[in-house]
Image (cartoon, rainbow, N blue to C red; front, top):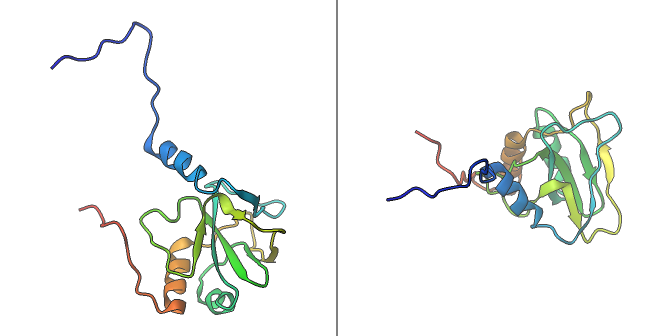
Length: 149
């Protein structure tokens, strides 16, 4: 078996798996017209995604969380900001909707901020949010990827 020969000084561009996943995810929401913005003074060092749930579940989930990040709401849904890629190896239970980039599709206005955490980090930890949502919906947590041995 021969090895391909490359011209001297030329290397193929290296694209890591994370980059490929982010590019693919960027295509998921081509019609998103709005996004949830961070309150002034907050930073999102890990990027932002959002988890939306029906408005009637919001008040039930909130007290079950050890830390609550930025939460936005309107009369139909509540959105929690989570670190980017918080859906990796997780299947969020219905009726939750996971949105990459905290993008909102088909929304005429951006929902209002109903909770701002102390400090500068806007995230709700995704695993406690996932478990609280599973409990509120009566869903058994389903881990989609086995842990490496």
